[in-house]
Image (tube, helix red, strand yellow):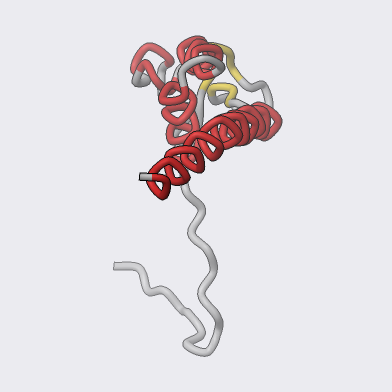
Length: 116
């Protein structure tokens, strides 16, 4: 057994994790983590809010991958922060549009309730 000399007063160093993307083949990824399917959900999200909400959940909980290798890491290429920002901008616009249509409706229903 090799002895390890560590200074008990030294702060712990972060553990270097192995890059799991290097060994992960593209066909083994779940369908919703693949870029073509996520892109289709983004386009569907323009007219169907739940699809865009699903993409936001997918992006928040992990990466979306391209079927290309990243030369710097050797792993699969991932959606950049720019792609993620675009998804959230589209979501924000959708929330504003839905709110703009929903608030007047709710106010009219509330006003109609007071007239009875």
